[in-house]
Image (tube, rainbow over all chains, first blue to last red; front, side, top):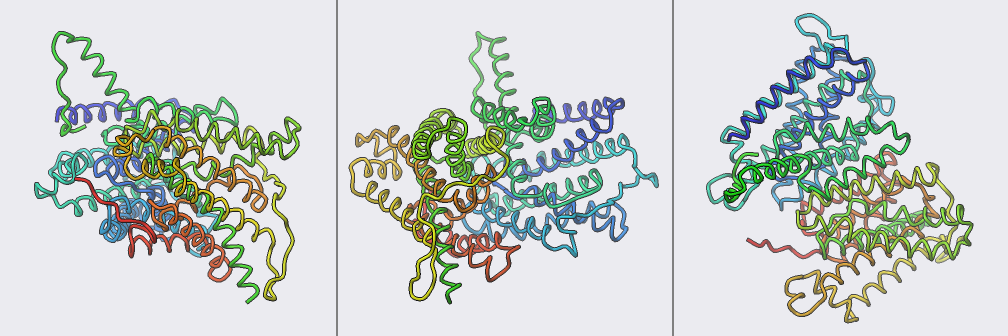
Length: 330
Length: 292
């Protein structure tokens, strides 16, 4: 439990730093930071599905897309306020998550991956082909920025802070969920589904709930993404992007509370930073991810964990190392 | 009717190529629980290697093909197993699957930056033209692709079922622990599976590149199709991957012609979802028992 409190501390401290730090950043820097936070929200949802409930979803970018299109249509076409679109995006994805999960989880456990694979492809095809609704490959433009207390957030710094506040709110909600009895049930599922079932946890219900909540986070991220880029087309929601989000969660360390932020840093900021290498930056990116996973299959957080353990062992060498407690909240 | 026959033949030919990729995918999964997300890139790269050897080293085509095949099997058969799979296999299926995803990006970008971002023509290694059969003009190329792929599968089938090494490989796939007790060199057998996977990818690459042209991004479509084919056919059966591949190719081609060109990619996926809901273990798959 202490570690989850430590997570909360790191989260709040990080948010405070991120609130103040980029005041002098240019527009591009602010854009990358905002994109990082939006991606982290989507990765947070996937981390809930994958890291805590042990289900592979290959459709997180599709949920992001659903949220983005829903928000774009509601705010740009219908003129509704952003917060309404935000709630609707999350609810829509939650409902679709339930709809996909019920038949998929009826059968064996890894079939959810295949069903979400099909779903991701269908969402992409619909976004590309149904021009009357989504604008097809030409996309939807002129998505308005949300307004706070009647003030429209047209500047990049205010909007970045808005994204930061919403992302922090969503992270706090997830922190609370993980501390609640639900969260304990999610963890019990991951550690040992059979034992969880024998202790009276409804495995199917909780797996379904974790997946649907993860999907809802995808929708929320989409609702932030649309006003950030102000123009959306189908490309960022393709299957390859869903795989990319999966890569980020694993590279960050699935099942660690803070891993989505680190993973999104790997997925969003590392490629940007590697641009100095010229056209081959993706080559270096892929190489770096492979080396990271070969060295530490638990990702960056696993690496950090190992470093902390090493330091602790050095400090109290005479004592025997404490046995790891698998049920402890990570 | 003629058009239908041609579509069926073209579908089967594409399907046979998917099947080659799907069979390798299944073999690797069976013996070492590796989900290879780079399978499509495995089919893309050999043709690029051949073209690179022809262009940069000035080698004649047959020599380039032989060298590229050898190089590919060594690097992406043995090397892939030793460098990527071995250190990660103990840590579960998912990190390894993600690592192969990164490998896919690496291969794709490597082909793009190292060779060309444009689609390149690849010489056809099988006769082209048309033959008239039952009043329908059929593409000789499609027929030969089907024949070559069938020969490859037949050879693999004979090898697995009728040689000592093949049987040892099957034993490894079914139960590595018991196989090890019985004196099967399990590690060597797994390594051999990876080599066979790479060899099948080379064959598929040489067959598919004359049709789709050799391009760095080809892997995405082929990889997805092979993945679907493997699931549809049954993840734990070589025969299943063959049937799944042919079926996916057929459905893909027919739906492009008769359903909707813009939604053609969705139709094989609909097939996939139907199979999952009705027969989760795949068309020819065995139910996997769950160990408690």
